[in-house]
Length: 96
Length: 284
Image (cartoon, rainbow over all chains, first blue to last red; front, side):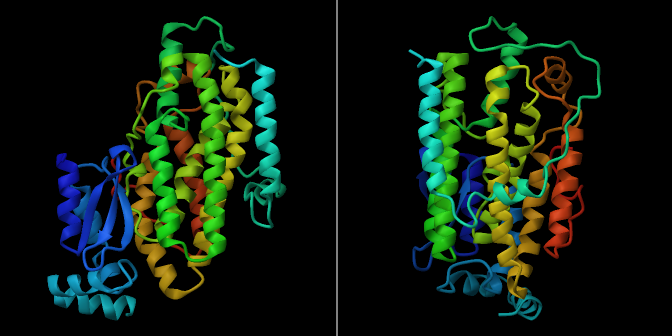
């Protein structure tokens, strides 16, 4: 696994999203809900260094409010456990 | 062995016929856009340069061929490019996993069919240029092709911005000194503009309600810098060479400026705030 792919894997693991096995000739990866296994998106392996963590962090409020993430609510719960005060602010700002 | 030109043209007419039968009120999206006049700005070369014109089979100067291949490697839409097919595979998966309505899913299917048409067109061009290039796998190097797509809005921005980049480059190829590219440029431009309009149509739908608009505004911060970065560095040392050989008309900064004017106008029309153009940029 390349360093960038490992970065991506770690960044998404924090919010309850698993990086699947490489698809599409090894360039792209499915993003799966760590709670129920449903596909929630995909990502490529040519992000720049430190980009994955920054992108996932920027999306924290969107996972918290349910605007991104699996309909099963796993990412919503993961972000609540990660940072309760930020999660509450996201509910107030973006709505549940 | 390459097929005779008339045979290849006949095959393209069969594809065009199939396309005609796929028309709906919405598809192809380029139809409405061009019916209102030329949607894209003129890309006018402002420096003095010699006139070059090379057709398939002509001996090409080494530097010219190198630049042309470099450009086509970036373009990527080739039937023999595994990474292009992989990218299309991700589009299929997104359509399967995240589609909001059956209508949108069908639109994505039309999009994929049209991109595969381009793959055939660029395959022909590649075969005519250098046989072993036709089967070369060239993964998309730019990070914009690799950004995570986790919502239909992500996918809509991907099409709005990334396919539009293709439309702008194809507009420039209308004046290309490489005749096979110049010949197909208008079709590719039109289609790519349509793909961008498809993304814009999805964004229009998404922005109809408050939560959709919030989502679009937030993830615009991810897509906007990537879209502007796609044109490369403004001080690229290769730009003057491309212009000299007639492979491009304008440099990276100029085509980015015109692109930015275009997308900013459309983003404002959606009710979105245009991000700071320098924020999170990697290739200025």
